[in-house]
Length: 151
Image (cartoon, rainbow, N blue to C red):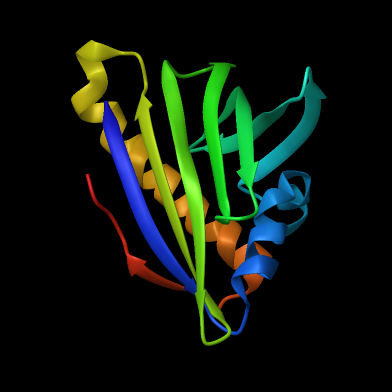
């Protein structure tokens, strides 16, 4: 299983504002072409979202269970169905001096063991690029990648 960790600074935006914007998944397609569509639903008190994103020359689709904690400014997600074997992780937003730090962490497994050494680094780069594109789409070109990768 591969892991991606990235930290991005969002200048001049407080953590509560950044958190509220990040929680509004259905907004993402309006701000970045990498996210083609997102729909949300609630069932028995649980939150789910269905995603369609650009992946290289194709499209990735999945459904995930989402958790939101406005007290800690965290969003958790775990894939329940989709094109890859495993996808889970979290967002964490912290603020200082009117700006915010957004940390994104994800674990994923493309589910093709014989090609994992080839496919998973490509998927990791595509995921990193998509996260940066989403944040720049939502918050503008002034966002700064602090920690490009870990894992």
